[in-house]
Image: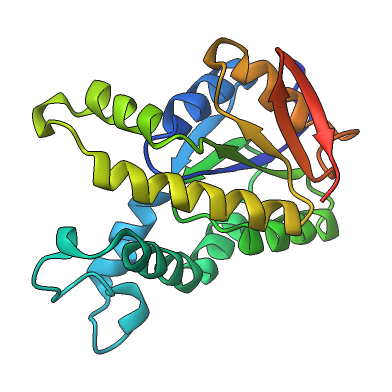
Length: 218
């Protein structure tokens, strides 16, 4: 594929297919993948709840799985926002080397992604950001079943993920970042590539409709 970027950030909720999409996009473009979840784990390992409470909101809860989905969503959003400096740290480091990369993760917020795009432009580097969207909890439940069959059905987790996906999509549109529907899966890479081209990367929302990519205004 003709690569029109130096660094891509792919955000999206858990279970929507980010890792697979990032791997396919990187392979097609001759880039490599940075999993932001690894950075999150490292940051949480190096800090404590006393030092940085916003990074440890789920720790110490008697039964996080028993929390209402809306409360889990609040904690997840707060954690993602607390991790925004780490996102920018990864981006700034990648901007120092001439090697293309794809950064993907649940905790990439549109706010941090928009700042990364701006910093890339200021540095003369082609930084793009796109968010994958899957609003159907049933589809995410099925994805979890394929990926983690040993855990059994996970409908509550999928419900939270679908709500988080909606939040990410709304925030991405507010920051004029493209949003791409995960389905239909066979055309996802083509639609991702379209969303990352210079002519379309700055437009608000990329939404799949009848097999074609349609742009919407915010």
